Amino acid sequence: MGIKSNVDDLIFKLEQIKDKTLNLEPVMKQIASDMASTIRMNFRNETTPDGVPWEKSDRATKENGKTLQDTGRLRNSITYKYTGTRAAAGTNVKYARSMHFGVTKGAYGKRSVTQKVNAFTRTRKGKTENVKSYSRNREIQVPWGNVTGRKFVGITDRKRQRYLKKILEHIGGGNV
Image 1 (cartoon, rainbow, N blue to C red):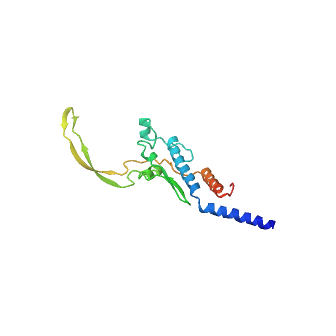
Image 2 (cartoon, helix red, strand yellow):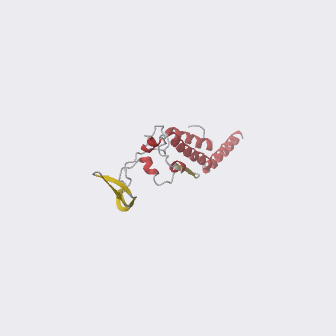
Image 3 (spheres, helix red, strand yellow):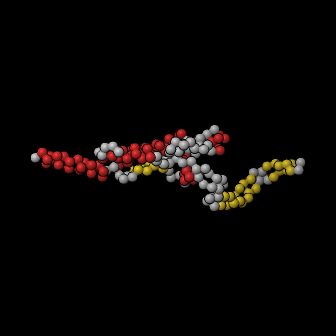
């Protein structure tokens, strides 16, 4: 009789673990939210996920601003998604990949543009002359210069272990 109750307890515990394993959505929501918070912290600290400082951008240096945060669009676009089996955080901003990995001048080809030049006064060989406004067509390389990559998305081994621990705690599996 005592053996039967131990078996019943074990079966009950296994059923609980199975139910929690089939519904990982609550823990995935926590993990996805934490991933997004970590990315936002990378922007705040101007560091990679591993804590390595980003190289200061020319614009940030000139304007005494923050790197990758001229308008704040990229930083503010960080969102997260989760399902019962996955957690993800990132951005849908088109230029995010280039900012994260970097890109070389002209990597995306050339683009035709029309440049409008306003009227101005110039001096040549000691003579001053007025130049009327005009338009001209040009081809420019895209991007027009090299872009240094500054990693802002990623998971460290320490975070990976923390997330695994959260999942195991959720299903009742204890520590890693």
